[in-house]
Image (cartoon, rainbow, N blue to C red; front, side, top):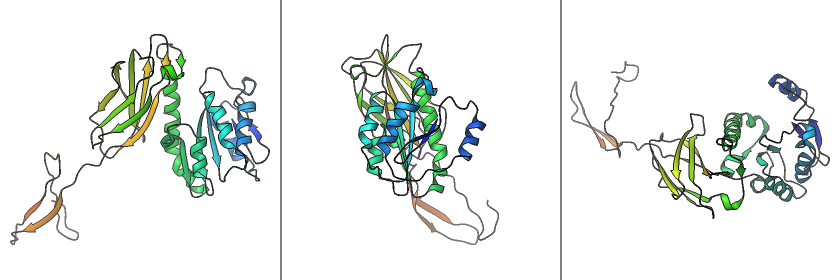
Length: 291
């Protein structure tokens, strides 16, 4: 579904209007841009009251996601309207262009902000967000759907949800996770992690009495998305989410050349931490074949 807004929000099409990808793309191509003011709070209220209703095609069992695209600071209270949506379990992603107020985007968006807030300098640059945003959105939907975990109901109450996820001791291959358990301890935790640029998700299941984990055998210099879900006998609590990048592998430094002769030379360097072997390549400059 899609709505445009200025001082008067307008529904372009409802969730039930189209059933194929091509139909949606055709609708986007024929969309006429609506200029005007920036009443973001009014627009979010419009989405809640008009676009996320069963009569507009919203299914009760489906996850509810709102993607806000704005190029300016709101002229009304966007934060209050956004909080109303978030309190109802609706997740908001905020994308700013040009003159968007980044502080306002962070207020409006759902946590974690590393996954839900995006900002670019001009409209053509929006294309650079498509890949990552698509992966984050689709994975988020899968995560929330998987929380049903053998048809268990999802309960997002504070009694069943952990808080304060911290990621520390990050190396090129590992990171340490800690979190504060909910008032009612879960039976177990399910930790899901995967590279943000795509890759198969991996998971670890822990006893509910444990509230920390070291993830190992990670890929260096890679951004990872991490989720922690508490599992109960009759419900699944709301998950914690975080994002961080592993460090790049350390490099050898201070390369020196000595003992030169007509057919040999000696190389020496400062060791790279953790390296078990070195691969040395040489070629005749400038266009010689590599040996």
